[in-house]
Amino acid sequence: MNLLQLVKQKVQDAFTKVGFPEAQTLVRLSDRPDISDYQSNGALPLAKTLRQPPREIAAKVASVLKEDPFFQAVTVDGPGFINLKISDNELGANAFRILSESHGGYERPDTPKKIVIDYGGPNIAKALHVGHLRPAVIGDSIKRLCRFVGDEVIGDVHLGDWGLPMGLLIAIIQERNPTLPFFDPNFKGEYPKEAPFTSKDLETLYPLASQRSKTDETFLNKAKECTRKLQEGDRGYRALWEHFIKISVSDIQKIYQELDVHFDLWWGESHVHDRLQQMIHRLQKDGTIISDNGAEIIPLGKSKNGNDLPPLIMVKSDGAVMYGATDLATIEERVDEFHPDYILYVVDARQGLHFEQVFSGAEKIGLAQKTHCEHLGFGTINGKDNKPFKTRDGGVMTLRMLIDLATQSARQKMESGEMGRDLSESEKDQISQIVGISALKFADLMNERMKNYIFDEDKLTGTEGKTGPYILYALVRMRSVLEKMGVSATIEENDLVTITHPTERQLLLRLYALPDSVQTAYDNRAPHVICDYLFKLAQDFNSFYHDCPIKTATPDIQKSRLALTKYALHIGLLMSDILGLKIPNKM
Image (cartoon, rainbow, N blue to C red):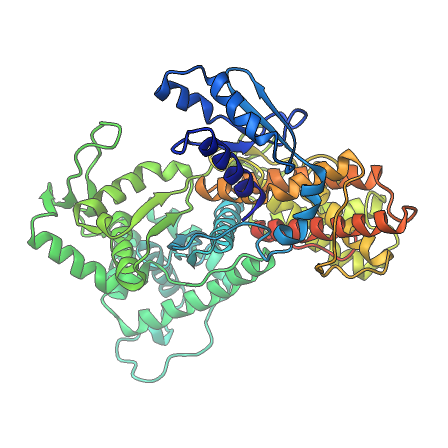
């Protein structure tokens, strides 16, 4: 039982004792920490039911709570709020029992969920760009958060590896290298194991082919034919396509590995190709899919807000299978394969209508009864001009460029002396990489998911204010305090805390607030709540560090403050891991 649950139980017992056994205690963290630690608003709804003044009800409950030495102060405020301040002794006495737990006092539910998270969404033959940062770090953080809560989670990168883009690549490669065995219909041997191109070649060729297809109808028709043959299983085209996948995925994995973002599945749109054709045929047969001016569609009716939804186009009049069809087949596959309670899509908010159509289609074919689909949209990363973030010369900012920018910014801070004092050159290289990437991830995650945000490279790696380095520096300082005092960071049963200063109390209360922050973040799929918690924890620890000397304290107080530092480090590392932040040994 964590501290909030313990307070709730005591308040419930008090309501029961004065004759209100069915009362909702409505206990939460106080909005006014200068007045109280927790607040109960349970008297207000009860007053409506009993038609009694809420202050009278609150006063009766408060009179019981005042008798409990667990509370240092109990007061009634406003229309009937019960303010609760826990005694210093109780705050210290519960530290080991609650804070030493592997989940910092968070109690996992008895029935965890099974969740598939679709995030990342890179495209084969295209360089990851700045727009791929948000789905990667938000999706990975939500995956980590759900696993922290106890859910079984499967993360799927969902590659864009099928359709016309692949046909465009095949067409332009065939045009430039027609003698390759992949294009010889009479070739019977093994195709080359080494690709006849590099990832850079693909990244150059695709935009050329795409642009050309907009003005050259002959080339476009050739690409469509290549797409058709690829999807029908042409042996040479499939072998060439496998090279596309192998080379592109290798490059994509390197960048995601650098970001410490991980996926359990590296499936793409191609994975449901066979299922897709079967599903379309089945839905045509049962009348769910109807023909409309040559296209195959699923009529959807009204949206949740009462507006007419455009139909979900499954197959265009030219025979091209649409993304909506692929997404619907993917939901069906995930239901059959994993039986998830939820499927979460971490995809740009601008795709909202698309997912509303897909989820409506899933409901129409009976999939919504088997799983719940959520689109976790997010805003865009903008430059200081409030337009999509680009390079200084106005070009597309690749994710590689963005990582390098963050790393270089961290290194510059070290060279200027803002951080990294007394570090060797090799240490500066290693730490600037860790700090830069953690700063990049924190700068993204600290913003509310649905909001656009302005990327400020000047503030990115600053050690003041709400930044990644500020968080890292506090955690590194915690480790350093323990190391300098020759104390292990491992928490032991005799790590007792005695409160002697207000900042010790504030830090301890912050540590106890972990379960509430985790639950709020989980319920709202909101990593920024964890960022807020970590920032406040860093602030509280820095105040404690400034106000409560450790080295010069008496032995008992010194031991208590070192124990508090251990607890702060333990909780800080738990929460930073949810965000996917790595912590350097030095800064």
